[in-house]
Length: 149
Image 1 (spheres, rainbow, N blue to C red):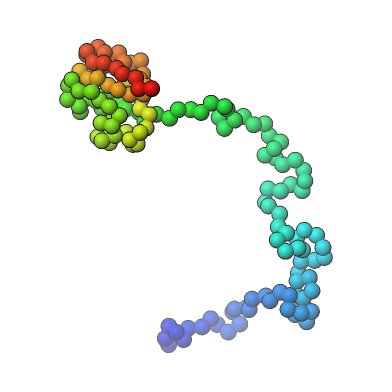
Image 2 (image 1 turned 45 degrees about the vertical axis):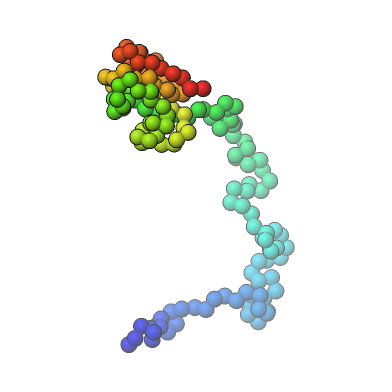
């Protein structure tokens, strides 16, 4: 026996139902679709969520939550104060420098500095937003905070 000689057992496979091939086939004329109506027509399918003309559930329920609110939340890439220790003291830390080091995912992302950890070096940090604790920790050592608009 060879692979090209393999066949299914006799009578185990049934042929495809050929609809609309004359009355003698038993599936002629309407082809199993019945008489008239939307489902009898070509292209006449109803979506799964259709409720027969009744007001759909999606439209009956009240609309609430962030998808309806008018303001958009600003997304920040966050960097903690403890991560800034990798820079040398008396340097100006910019968003480009943070993205080069891999601390920020996108080069032109909005950056927020958070106050987790401690800072041991005097730095000038430029970012779009700062946490209050981060500002205190940077200024406590003698560094400066510059907010980018």
